Length: 201
Image (cartoon, rainbow, N blue to C red):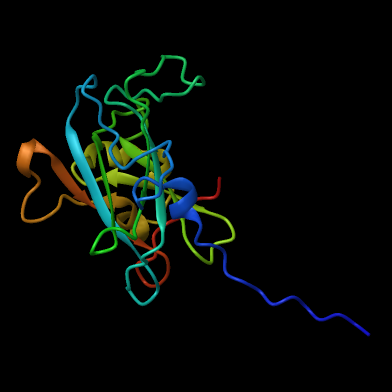
């Protein structure tokens, strides 16, 4: 007798319980939150909000987004950064899409500075969701950094017609909301004509 192939299963979703328990009301401590701000860190207050969309343009309600960014001086909170990071700013956050009525991820942070003379200010993004055997990597660049974006080697390596999938526009009707926070909109398209550019790492 021969054994048949084991039926395939989608992966997860386990992210809410394991990686963002505070957000979902579980009695566990999270190591990262959607709010990266610290009263000890001065910088331009920003909010990044968006949705993870499937091939039909429908919002995915059980994705989790993880971000890592430099501080306003372009320094990472990591031993590999020889300039020394700002100990008050970790630059690391996580947000699930299942607790917002619109299935958005929302991060409150400070605008990152340029890491070096070549790179434009950006936020590194990792996407976790059901059905992905391995998470996906992308970046968020800012629409109001046109000059820096035009010189960024990573962004310029992307075909011109797809670069817009990595650039977060200012949210309409205007960039300024209560408290002087600049709000950017960044939707992540998993498939389709507007599929977001993902990187191999």
